[in-house]
Image (cartoon, rainbow, N blue to C red; front, side, top):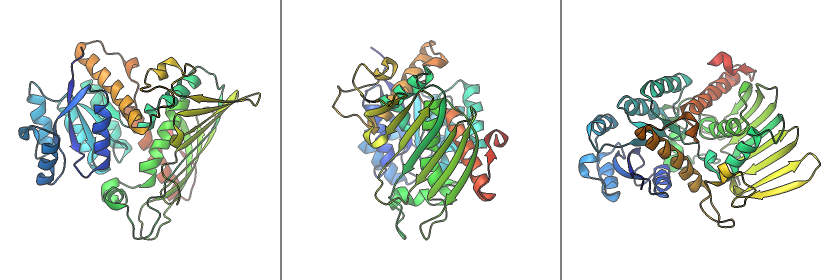
Length: 383
């Protein structure tokens, strides 16, 4: 029987959404248990969370620096840490745990600048540690199937990619969406972008990891629509890929009526693939002869390397939480292999720091394009 790993968490207190989601995702497979943490900057709230999570009070730390140092010195110290704090804190926290020799899972975007992400990648490589960036949608069985299908050349040459991610929760003046929205709209806590960092990095990652294409250049128009906002809440981006293909990305937090409407459309020389996050169990394929095929997770038509992540029979709906759990499944498998000396790079089946860094290169190129009057900006020149 495989050893149950232990992990710690920074952020993710009792009143937080994303921390609870990460804990539930890890718990789905019972492969790791929460044993340490700093759950809030407020000590009383952190202690209350630790008590609720049945954490030894001695392992509820006052700071992430203390936690990294102490856990690295313990014989039973954590195998990895999960960082679920506002964006501006990610870099220093990731760095502290990597320097202490601890694997890291960090919510996206991994940092607030390409330079910071590049430093983390170099540090992770130097320490031979894993740094997963939780772009959750890459954990869907259907997305993994699309990725495998394109890698096998079944769609032919990719010609166009259309992706959109509209939400409507921040569409109203004087309504900053509570705690979750307030820090996203604050430049001191989220960096120079709001919507593009929160949603646009998901779009970039999904398109890049499914198609395998690299962005050559972008042209971005970043709008501030809602009165009282400082950062972007609606973004329209033209994309040119390294193979000459074109793309259009749209992200918005001001699209009234949209909940979490991430959609991906990939057009190749031999057919088309359509995917909708809100119906994530299904894939639509349109073949060159015009025939339309609907694939459903749970059937043998799904690529076996993707299908191995299925948790329930067809018709028993899987979704976002299971997708995140699938990322953790691969991450934990890789950590175990590292401990056993059997790890190889091809075992990684999750977004890592290299993908996180690409997301920041995309964001910074879009910012430059927007600031210079919506002009084309070459990503390679920005790196």
